[in-house]
Length: 215
Image 1: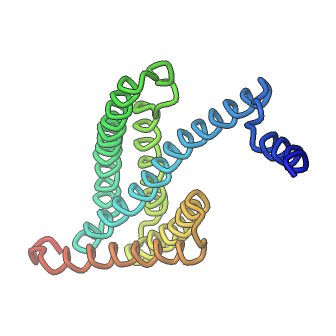
Image 2: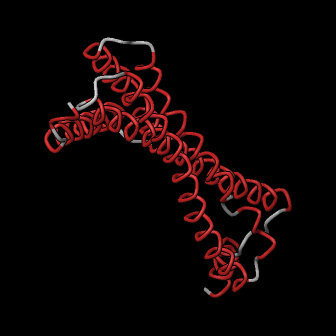
């Protein structure tokens, strides 16, 4: 009986032994991990760029709509948009830099505790995220500015600004959905409705509180 059990036990123990990992498998695993880190870094600054463009589009359009509620001149409306572009782009860039740098410091400190300081190149780059966010904000802000720049008639200008901003909101919402792997239609409509709400509230409240002599 013991002789019959011996081959089975040998086979069982052999099958449970850990298989040695080859150099090729180890190298492949390291390459896969590097790709994951690289994708994470790219996704981070792409996300910052999409959010920056959406913020630039919506905040600048809302500012222009608010001023347009009390001032019908094209120059003052465009000047307001330019001021919003400059202030917003710098604000977004500085805010993104501070935020990502804080994350960088936390992750670097953790790497030092784990003895993995050599992997700090894989950490997010605050400068890249800052530049992407600020530049994207400026690009987004250009949409309502270009929409209003060549139209003298007040009502036509307001309609054109709302139209081009709505199209851009749908596009940015779709891009954000692709990056976040979310439903495209639902995400785009959510961004569009939120943008309409922001512009309508800004237009209405500004018109409500503005002195009569400004209108």
